[in-house]
Length: 305
Image (tube, rainbow, N blue to C red; front, top):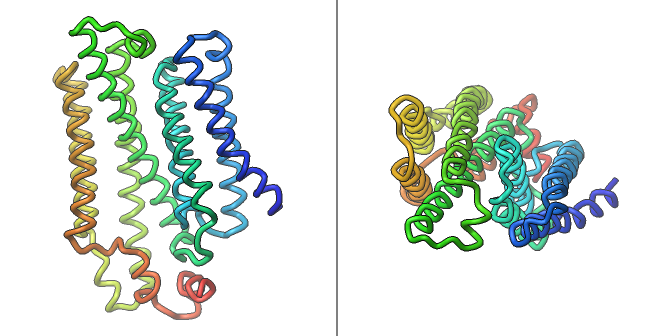
């Protein structure tokens, strides 16, 4: 089994590169063969990667996102899988070379990063935390794709205004389609973020029952990172309501989408640097977990040590 996983680990970056090359071929040539094969190849890569991650999760008895390599690989899978959902919805393959290129780059970085440290957070063995982490990854991946489509909308609108009808103009979907793709990506990301936040709250209270009493006080729904996540959720929800009921369309809507995502990145960066949060899980793993023998997290922590 280990040798098979090693083989798949080698094949995955090749598969991602092949999918990117197929979409790039389609972008430059609009060849019917590339149009037929690119989505199928990308879907095969996604299924293979999901299978590898499932087998690794069973073998490691934890979510395989604990090392830098594992996280980059999971991010590549999330990007490619989310893109394929949007592509299937609109039958628009003109942006595939960008998303598959990003996924391939992340997969190459994951393979170059190596297996990483053997000891990882015991929280990755907790189903509640694992589910929360996966939902967060998928939610922000969808919002990232919304940002990409909004940027492409603005680029295409600028080319149209200047009457520059180059290759990018000919290959990208129509403005209306790009805008709808951006909105659909948000429609995917918002419920995923809500589920991530809801599961995170439930897991937090469950974890508090398994911590020493003095440590459990650090877990609070008023944590700055949680509050910022709710603000992000409400802001994107307001954007969807504005688009649906108040006619927010066109250039203004896409500028708002770009500005919102930039604000998310800046806000998260500031939160990590300037505000204390209990989301610093390495500290939580080592010093905050209760140690009764029946506590599964404590047992996992001792095993990792």
